[in-house]
Image 1 (cartoon, one colour):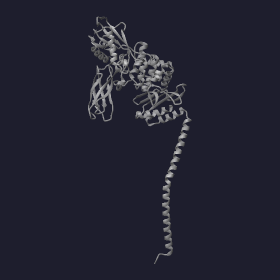
Image 2 (image 1 turned 120 degrees about the vertical axis):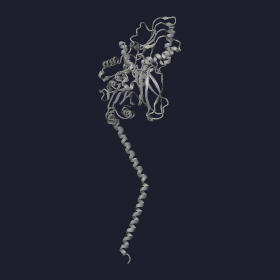
Image 3 (image 1 turned 135 degrees about the vertical axis):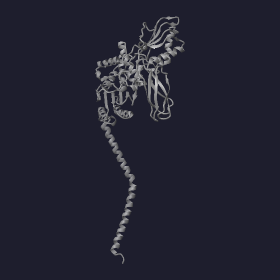
Image 4 (image 1 turned 180 degrees about the vertical axis):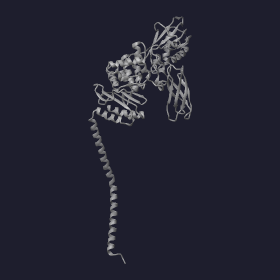
Length: 515
């Protein structure tokens, strides 16, 4: 039997429905394919319009906010960052012209300022010493001259000049300065010194290193102490050569200049590839013995680390002896110091007036290097010099006493300046951002301000001093915004974690609000 007619009709209807649906799907597919670019373009335009509207609303919203409000928002974000989980931060900002407080967070909490402490020392030195101040190193003849012979001692009295032998100034370079000393002696028609050449170090305390400096710092160039007689900024370079593999020994090729008194025990090793400079010098002031420890990169042929000269007066005497010999001037006695004489039970005594002197560059010139290159030695010398000029004897404790007393008279609580040194190297230093900003404000009103301001380095297109020690980062200075408004600020962070460079970028984001 064949298929019933009704079944055939139903089958044919379903078949044609299927064909129609199939053709409809193909039509829709091709239509969508043709329309898709147009749809995507419309969606893109809507998205862009939305973003533009949001941006405009954001600008309108932010332009309606004050600098204080925007600083508060930026600081809130900063404080809640993971790097600040165990940290404390302080930011104090004022309007430079009116003194109005723009932002204040933790401004009365004492914090480690690192090298931003130098802005306090520099301002105090300008006030208490004067911008034209220069150190003098005095020369005495302790005995008569007969024919071409000095029958007594040649005595050189140091008063703390940190620039003697420094390569930073033309007149203080070793060759120039030693040449000046030879000329002094020849001008007195001296060809023979029958007795000793003595460095008088009595102007300063024997404690060249302030209390609070750590063992890991004091043998390295940035931890150089301030003595009554300084030489070559109390710095030398150590030239190293490492083996090719991690753990290989490291050879000390030489020191420049050759150290006069130190025997260094070498415990250096080659580190891992890319490990960088992890070498530290450990040698106390006046010492004959020390250690060099840590690692440098493997395969380094001429790797340089810099240390602090443990007894600068002795280093100078060695250089002076070589120069006198080359100049044909004979010294029959010893090269020694007043400290060594006292240790041997023969304290130095002499009388009479100096026959000549050397003068340092001005405080303006020194401050430029002090702030721009953050030379710790200068800060320690300035503090001791403040005491020396007031009581005839240079000590850190007295210098800091005069510093705190001066700012107390200007309305700053001395408890806001809990300072152990003049450079900020001590992790025990505690100052407030309020005190720093008030000092910067005071400086702005003084006749020496242009010299002071010019000495500030520039970071993030802002005139500010930076500070860095372990887990401490700081910025402190001045900035003029695009609208002409002038700000004074101090921003200290203590006990942060993670990368310093990451933290700095986050601090910049906050400070950028002042632009």
